[in-house]
Image (cartoon, rainbow, N blue to C red):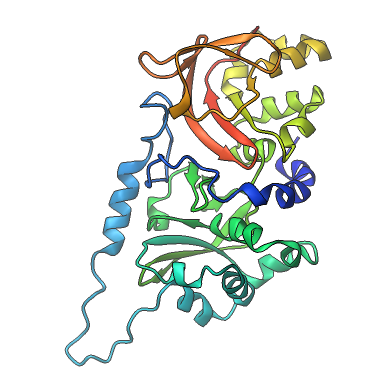
Length: 332
């Protein structure tokens, strides 16, 4: 099932879950965000940092000098740059309602994925008005990164947003984030950079995040077949999923997944789910009981392993849980 189909689970789930979305991320995570989050390196917190820091530093050097005549206009901050563009009136109004204007006028640096008025118009009527201030803040801070990342520094993979949740960047055919395309990149501001997007980003649940990642087609299809999509989309859930990639499923003998009965498939899939939120920093060596009642064994020697599977990307944070990407399917 594709991402658009799972969006049906999404809008109501997002509205229900957003009250707890602010601060859902791991407070100990690195501020450097873009790029791979390698689970084998200290539980997945080191990926992509060097490129981001270099990009941020490069973006902050220069631009401070004025010519001898002093006629150059001082650069505008992110808020004033967006207002001056004229096609972000809904965004500006929402930022004011959420009390985020002063924050985005701060020193930063920030990267803002800014939805146009046309992007907001694509939302169902009344969506923004139905959100509390806290929920609106969760949505808006899901559009910002606490670093300056020009398009030339973007790497495909998960990115930690300002509210602590994860989004997914892609670079094939142009830069995109989740289901939004960057239509204009690298609008410079005094305290960061703006990338204009054509769709409002809504913080995803576990199933939606897997869809945005683009590498879990087999897993999503199996979850749907087993009737687990609603459970994994539940805004009240607090789960951790060890998620095998499409490549992990491809390594199984041909026909393995198709040969499972519905009950067998459900038993395999629930063996990948822990009924609590477990960040990589919380993992301890030993047995961990899964949703199907059987335990997996976590090893922290030479990287994080679950049974015989390696955690290759850790700490993808969603509105209702955590995803750790693994390179082998776990079989009870």
